[in-house]
Amino acid sequence: MKRSLEFAGTTGEEVAKFIVEARLDFKAFRTVVLKPGEAVIVDLNRNEIHFPGISYGHPLLETVLRESGAAFDRKTIHEEPPNEAKRREFRCSARYAWGQDRIA
Image (cartoon, rainbow, N blue to C red; front, side):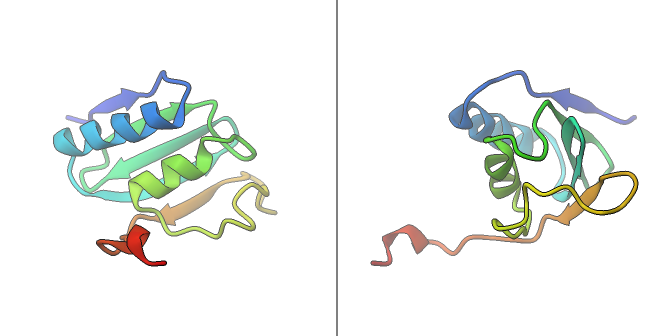
């Protein structure tokens, strides 16, 4: 049975907390699908976490991608792709090294 969650918050802290809690109930995140009007995290079992309204140009987009472990380029993330569907997929493989914030 396919499961689905929908985010309804408005701040970066709420996004981070929501994703951390969702990780406990879902399998490993596989991809983040970005399309006009919405971002969707898809897990190993194809369950989905929806972020309506968070898309290209939204200030919370980078938070969703970073917290989900998606690999992305900060310079081009807010530009719509040239394809007809305006859709991008990001693999969730990026992991930040422990202690990386302590490096001066």
